[in-house]
Image 1 (cartoon, rainbow, N blue to C red):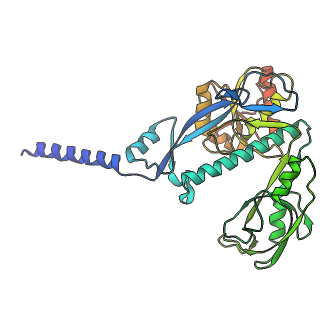
Image 2: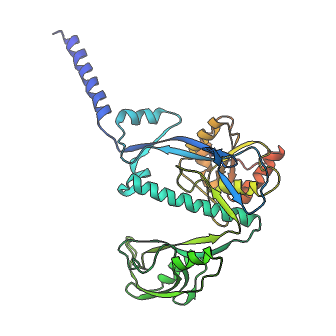
Length: 364
């Protein structure tokens, strides 16, 4: 066989082998891409996203769209060809698999965690919006989760109201950790609680829960590397009672990143006029009870999805601004926000058409 023919044959066989390897050999990566956007002022699957009863609401228009990111499933194994294509594709992002599913987390575990974060973000959005409107909201500290096989398992339960630790009143979740860690591992700590069932019954009967219990728990040592502090195996959170009903109807969405847009949607429906003046505004960002806006993941995917849907302005958490500004979709203005007050101020400028002084995101 002539040398040239043999060389071409060998090269062809090698190329075929490389292509086969690229198709059949999995690589430890996952892919993110723009997901759906939903107008919090509108409907989804035939029903209003925000449903408020027991309080006067007002008609509004325009868009306050929350944004999402699609990700490949935990058990999906991307091949090399798909990874290279994803790296080259402008609107997609290939990331290490552990970025989306750390520590071998299953898709079910990730879905459950995202659902819990989504639920919490809705509660915080309601609180932030009502505080902005000076509407009183009752709050209390609860047991949010109990770690399996921890000293608290079977003694404390999710939903128990924590009134005090060692006789010291608890006003916010951070107080619980502070009071527990004053102990040495192995020492007892005394929780004064309202059991979850008693609290639920009191809320249903519209009365103040009065039956409390004292629960003694022996602390253990934290599993955190390099730290030897006392823990009891719970996380504390906050629960609320609202003076009227606010329901958020949105399925198949998880995570905390819609908090800001839910808060703005609630505020808009509870106030006369339109926050946007009919403009298409989208955005993202976590929100806490005090209205502080936090960063989220997948910002580049969310701006692309928003612009594709028609958004002109995008409310962007300050800590995401630099990443978002490095590749801003044409025709989309990124507006930097740190709080719900920032967002409301920016919307006032957008509504009036006076946008010269909007706090815009920059790449630096």
